[in-house]
Image (cartoon, rainbow, N blue to C red; front, side, top):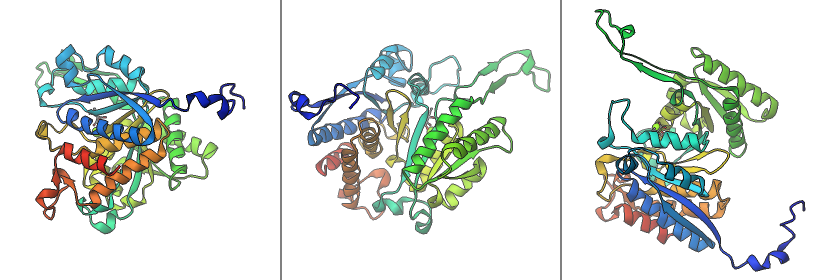
Length: 386
Ligand code: IPM
Ligand code: MG
């Protein structure tokens, strides 16, 4: 063995009683955020107990909550806490209280975008899977969604989200009537290395799955897309020729996702297209409240539900905590290599659903009233099955 510290088990006997301990930076954020975060923590604690690992959770501010407390959506202390942690668990940011069209006013979403950028989280994994108990929840026909299991790999730190942008209030923006008007632009820019690394992530993911990648672009119009396509193909031909690669134009992808969702395995695309298509793909399952995501880079990773902060139901104790809980599953899998624990969470969620228990958003006309649980009761039900 090259590593002088791994001299074999006997030399490590002293450490056998020392529990592994991980520091989790928790960012509850806004609206339903704190409610679902509480359930994520419950599950972390339960899993830790069962698998002999200690998770030390510390809360920090982000989004509207941070704007209220410090005037900025991502205070330096939060970023420092995130950097010093082993993983970040985020709930949701945003709400009508902080909605504004004033470009100089802070917005909750800036906190999310900034933490992604600062931590270098360029890969966003959004799995789209259907729990069999919920197959009736989709608005698509059962035969269309049968077998849906895809992984959206969204580029997360480039493109339109982070390009140069500007808004003018000057004469140049004059309207046809000659009066002063406004003008604005956003730019979509990618560098070769940004596309290379996300393409590699997609091909690697495909190798662990069904070996297929659909690369989504708009190469018939956009220069960045033509470069995207070229680079994705080069990486494929050089290092991943065993993976099946298809190019899909983004407008067509929007259609095919509904037409033949089960055909897709890994879908890789740039930031903005990925934002839009991942919401669409989530709707295939019929339950946005069930989908988790992982944002990975070269350092600490961040895990969060794919859904938003649901201001309409905030504070009522009815939000679905399962996407938050499944984000914990992804954390165990990707940050801590605890595959067995991750599987246990997924199985527990599946069992809860098989038992007919639902939060309001995934209940239907046939769900008996006593099976409709609030946020905390749903978290408890998952913990009970762990
Ligand atoms: C998402 C969200 C964010 C995004 C918003 C809240 C900035 O929609 O994670 O998909 O656009 O990336
Ligand atoms: Mg989105």
